[in-house]
Every structure is written in C-alpha cells, then in structure tokens.
Image (cartoon, rainbow, N blue to C red; front, top):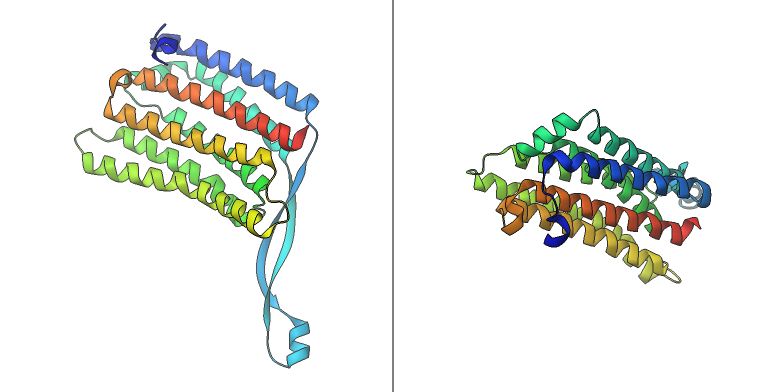
Amino acid sequence: MDKILSYKLKIKDMFKANYSLSAFYFIQLLVIIFVAKSFSLPVSTSYITRDQLLINAYGKNALSASTAHIFDVNVKSLIVFMLILLVIIYVWLASRYRYNYETDLKRESNPARWIHTGFINGLMMVAVGLLAGVYDLVTLIVLFILPIITNLIFIIKEQLPEQEKLKHNLLMILKLATAILPLAIILCYVLSADIYGTHGMGTYFYFLYATVTIYYVGTFVNQLLLSKKTKSWKKYIYGEQIHLLLGVIFTTAVIWQIFVGVLH
C-alpha cells in the first residue's frame, strides 16, 4: 500500500485524484443508465388497528397489527442518484471547493469528506437494506441516518485537541456503535430469511453484505491509525488517500454486486 501511494503525497495534487474519481463514477453512471434494468421494491409502514372480525367473533375490543404500502423504490434509480451525487461531489471538490479542501487538509481536518461520505453511505445502506427485505419506512430512515451520524462524529473528533484523550476515546466508541448498528439491523433480516424463509437470501447478497462490512471496518481502521499517527498515517494526506481508495473500491464493488444480483 505504501508503494502505491508514495508517488506523491502532496495536497496540491489531490484535485487530480478528485477529477479522476468523478470521471470514473461518470463512466459507471452511463453504463448503469443504459444497461441496467429497473427493479422496484415496496416501502411500507406498520400500525395497530381495530380487528372487526375478532370483535364480531368474541364480542370484545381487539387490536391487530397491519401493514400499509406507501410507495415503491426503484433500486436502479437509487444507484443512479448515488452515482450522480458522487460525480458532482468530486468535481466540486476539485474545482470550486478546491481551496477550502486543500486548506482543510493542511489543518488535518476534512468536514467535506465526512459529510458527503455519510450521505453516500446512508444511500448505500438503504439500497442494501431494501435488498435484505427491510421494507419498513422507519427502519429505512434509521439505516440512512446512522451513517450520517457516524461521519458527523468524525468531524467533531477532528476538531478536538489531541490532549482530550477521554473525549476522543468516547467518540471512537460512539462511532463504532453507530457503524455497527445498521449492519446489525440488516443482519437480523438476513438471519430471519435463513431461518424462516424457503431459500434464504440470494448468494450475491452474502458477498454484498461482506463487502459493506469490510468497507466499514477498513474506514474505521484507517481513521484509528490516522488518529494514532501510526507509521505512514503520521501524514494526514496519507489517510485521505487511503480513504479515497477504500471509497472507490468498495462503492464500485457494492454497485456492481447489486447490478449482478438484481439489475442485469
């Protein structure tokens, strides 16, 4: 890894990497638009209502759980939206926001990275959740918000003085909890499908879930090494490049595993 990233660890060159990423995501966007087929999944809500049949049968008030369909989510459109955002974000980082981006990197802080990563990860979790059978609207909202909270914690942590180790450690624990929770929610649905379903999840989904998990672990380890200033991670720009590398590898892997699973 050091050999791959040692060619230039200069902040002023990062705009080239951001332009390259925007072009790479744009190519994927075109392929998905013209090659992928549409695939929709329902979003519903659950509620308690009076069960008239039970009331008529037993002559007393009775409640039962019910589900209402709200709308459908087109998985292809969700992936297209995510890719459009990635193209726009990386062009913006390389152009209009370049000065602020480079200034933040010199200060060893990168709020723009954490904001857009949180939003993209939220969309990714919604897509993965839908494919796992998470159709409840409230649960999907939770899957979307938790990655944003995780990345907001990264921003707060970067603003804290290094001397406040207790706060840093508490934030690290909180980040770990908010990162694990959406994975745990989806895992519960996967286990339910395996236990109560006829055939469980499709094979592609197990690889998809593993990919997302490895990505989360990699991001967490990268940030941990950066905060500890371990070896090459003494340079903040090194951690930034690792983050970009993890993002492009695993985001691309997730998109194309979803394509193979349901969009081809």
